[in-house]
Figure (tube, rainbow, N blue to C red):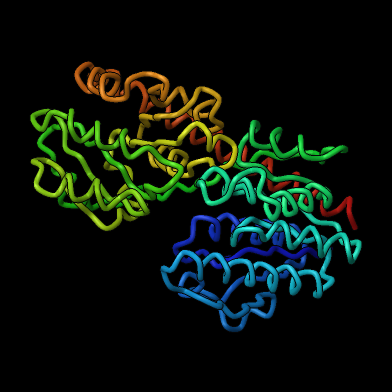
Amino acid sequence: MRCTIVNRNIPCGGSITGHPASELAEYLTKRGVQVAKVALRSSENGDADPSDESLHLLRRYYDGKNKILRLLSSMMEGRQLARKAASLQHGPVICMTDPPLLNFWMGRQARRRKLPWIYWSMDLYPEAFVAAGLVKADNPVYRFIKKSVHACPPSHLLALGKAQGQHIQSYYGSPPAASVLPCGIVHTGGSPTPPPWAQADGKIILGYVGNLGEAHSDAFVEAALKYFDPERYRFILAASGSKSSRIRALAKDMPEVVLLDSVPREHLSYIDVHLVTLLQHWDHICVPSKAISAICEGGSILFHCSDSNDNWQLLQKAGWRLSPSEDTAQTIKSFLETLTPEALQEKKQAAQALTQELFAMRDQAFEEVYQKIRDLL
């Protein structure tokens, strides 16, 4: 049996999508599937084995920060990745959604060559362009791309959550079956040596770690910084992305705020409450992997999101939700004033049980992909 996996990154590196792609490739290989991998040549693929003949690394057109050039290069990169994956004729193609519109190009290639493909959704494109305000829903180019995506149905779907899967299935007249595979299912076991900021003298450690971009509420993070009591809490802020500069500047001189560029995954276990946010109009388009990562490392989550969010539906036993429809400042102020060590411990214990469920979910999704590949050959 053979298959091909295509994504911007496949060797794990530091990529959030590269890790699950590598895990699936390893799982399928152990089940006797010959897996070809198609990705871009970049620093995030720096751990690629040069002797790995199954790995096809293609050129990356642009690696800078200019948004327009990044968008244009992403479209070119997606096209070349899809064409390469299809040209290999190496069984069904498992296509992720990084770079943006990779699924658009892959669907067209699959239809042209009558090639079965599996759509592995991360962020949804082209919908993310509308959610980010880059284009309007009635834009003719956007409408053409969306229509084309809907006209090239996959043979199977790997979705980040049940609701996202149903959202994508609604595109198609004959919806493909869907497997659920949340992103971020990794357990490092933590580092035995705590980082300096973890020496908090019994204080509860709050943390916002990762992207603070268009899909996230900077007002939520700002309110948390404004209302946390430095006598009771320490705040770890390692935010990046389009909305992070203002928040980092606001926090720069605040007591008990530790500003970091990033937090290694093995140090996530030292954060007690991970702040997670997703704006409601991004539901199903984006599903924050940081919530899954936090739970897998034994933490709890404070999630500013709608009640229909996939990760909230999955993880609510190990966290608290603040509704975007209520006053953000007042709800987080009340939460921080009333949180007790006992309530926190209860949520962290629930996280341990959920971690086992998440790994079982991952294993089941991998097995369903294997069975689908076998059926398609």
